[in-house]
Image (cartoon, rainbow, N blue to C red; front, side, top):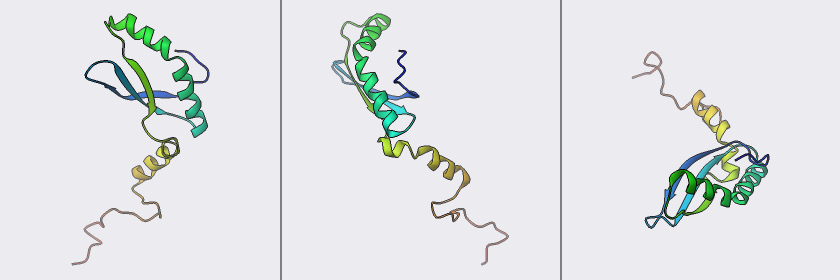
Length: 108
């Protein structure tokens, strides 16, 4: 789907109800909270096109209703890159390290 309003998006989870009537698509959205809201709105606008594509490609008897949602709230999703960087560096928010001391520095 090519729509200039849709930013960086990847599907993280798809949940299909047992009766195959509803499909919940959770997505990881890139960008600011405003850009994420715009992306969700654009995807909702193209919902019928996406259902048609699913029907053609999967040869389904009944195509489920699609429901799109962000995997994380927009304000938390915006902080994920910063949190991952902190985790990689092994530092807590206050700048102290939670790593155990080396054996050389440990006192018994």
